[in-house]
Image (cartoon, rainbow, N blue to C red):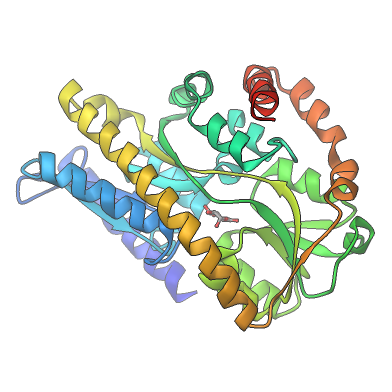
Amino acid sequence: MFKYKKGIILIFILTLCMVLNGCGFISDGKRIVRIAHSQSETHPDHIGLIAFEKYVEENLGDKYDVQIFPNELLGTSVKAIELTQTGAIDFVVCSTGNLETFDDIYSVFSIPYLFDSTEAYYKAMEDEKIRNEIYKSTRSSGFEAVTWLDAGTRNFYTTKDVKTPDDLKGLKLRVQQSPSNVNMVKAFGAAAAPMSFGEVYTAIQQGVIDGAENNELALTNNKHGEVAKYYIYDRHQMVPDMLIGNVKFLDSLTDEEREVFDEAARICTQVERKEWLLQVEEAKKQAEAMGVNFSEVDVELFKNRVIDLQNQMVSENEKLKPVYERIQEINSEVK
Ligand code: GCU
C-alpha cells in the first residue's frame, strides 16, 4: 500500500517536472532518461539495465543521465506502460502479457505452447523478420520496442498439489492483466484472477487465490515460494520481457545517439540473458530450501487442453499470422 502511495507521489512529481520543463526532464544540463520496471535490484532485468545505463552514460554522459526505478516504484507494470506511452517516463521493462492490451500484436507470445523448445524461443527472439513485424509496429500506440529480455518458461505453482490438468479444475489462479491469459487459464478449467505482479504474494497468503503461473524467479525474488509450495513443469508459455521506449523520445535522438541507445539495448540483453541462466538455477535451489516441491508432469496432457487456442487466437487476429507462421518455421528448423 505504502509502495503505491509513494508511486503516486513520484508520478505527480514527474508530471509536474514535465509540465515545468515543457518536455523531458533536465537536471544539471542533462536530459534525465527514466526507466521503470517491476523487479528487485538483484533481478537479471535490473542488472541488464545497469549495463544499459553504463553504456549510454559512457558514450553520451554529458547529455543524458539514465535513472532506473525498480520494484514497481512508479506503479504497476500497466501504469508504467501508460507513463511510457504518454512520455511521462521514457522506457519500461514489462512482460508481453501486460503489453497486449496496449497493442494486441503482443498477444502472439501468450499463445500457449507457441515455442517447441527454448532453442526455438531464443532463435525467434533474435530473428530479424519477427523483430521487423513487432518492434516498430506499435508506434501508433506511442511506444516502440528496443530489445527483449529472457523471462524463462512460465509454469503453474499452487498451494495444492497438482499432477494432471484435472487438478487445476476449480482453482483460482492469478494471471497477468491479459485477456489471452484469462482465456488460457479458463481453457485449463481453472478460474482466472488478473492482477498486478506486486499483489500476488498477499493474494496467495490470504487465500484469495490458489496459485499463479510464472518462472522460478518469482518463487525467490518475489518470495512466492513462501506461500505456494507446489511448482509443476507444465511449460505452457515462454513469455519475454520487452524494453519499450516512448516514440517521441526515441525520435528526438540524433542518428548517432540512437545508435548508442540501440547498442546499449543489445548489451542489456546480453548481460541479462547470461545473468538469467545463472539465477534460474540458483532460484531452484533456493526455492527447494524454502520447501517448494518441483515436479515434472505429462506436458502433452496439459498441452491438449489448450492447443485449440493456437488456431483460435491466430484466426481472430490477422496481425498475429506472419509472426506465428515464422515461429512455426523456426520450430521446425530447430527440430
Ligand atoms: C515475470 C516478468 C515480469 C512480469 C511478471 C508478471 O516476472 O519478468 O515482467 O511482470 O512475470 O507475471 O506480472
